[in-house]
Image (cartoon, rainbow, N blue to C red; front, side, top):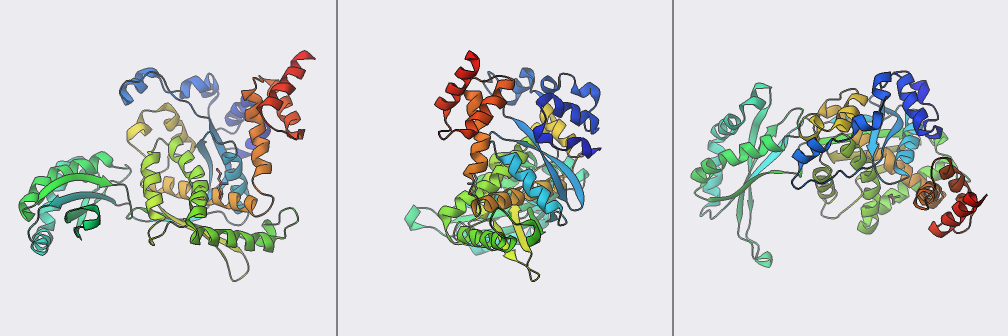
Length: 430
Ligand code: MEV
């Protein structure tokens, strides 16, 4: 890749950006022709993806630049409707790139399938029976999905949990069996669900209980991705704030999100701005990731910040974050959505673990940019600049008018749709 062609990418016109992708050898000249149509989801595929399909719902897909993750450079595709997200991710990555980039550690990817049983007269006896038959349970689960076993994955271990009856919720006691499954490059929902449904009758016979369901758990606590980054204060100075002040204010901002759930939700929403955009662009399931991540944020018993920002001994700002990230590199819409196939190629056909590294890094970068803006000039200045463009388009500006209206709008005291329409009207009357 000749990444020098991507310099000042944000200042290029749309056509220039596609040309730059060709010059940078990211796409071929042939791919560049009719680029948008080639990446669009054809109706005949969309029609088979869901019931009652009538059209497709489009979102902008953009590229976040400058990411250095585990010493490898990435151009990260992000699908989002929020104007500031890609700019914020790229700007964080540029700073963090200068201090060694993001470092990640990815846990051995293990997914969890749950079977819940009720009507068990003796929980301890049931538990003993299960633990004495772990090998047989694993074998039956694997027999239900031989192809994942052939590829080197499959069911690995079994644990049991006893959940007591809860009068407050009028809930009976549950005896729960977790089966840990390695789904390799896939997120593996179908593999897991096939296995847990297949072993339900066997578990009923071992426990004497009634299996009420078998389903994967999206709380993927055995599929964790951790990222760290380190930023010297020399890279943190902003406006009138010294690097030390910015560092200390970011640390305090994070502490606020650790202790206050009202702030933590917004802080984590900012992290998810980046995470969701990459998860979506990669063809993965955003709802699964959202649900698991927010549950993980409550693991101490209170909803808290997902990230931590602290001061290293030498004064550097150190960021860290661990998230459950059960994404796949194959399967689902990844194999059939032309944009997902393109984004996969753009990321260099990453393994599922590499994709986790990229996603968790984008999340921490997004958080860094948000906090840095919040504790210095505030976010409105940057946001409103980008919002001006959306207003110009909403007002009806087309082609070159968009930039003219945007620039004029930025100078006005009342940056709103009425002003944008006024500016456009004046422009059209010239
Ligand atoms: C806006 O989409 C995200 C932020 O609110 C995140 C944050 O407050 O940390 C800026």
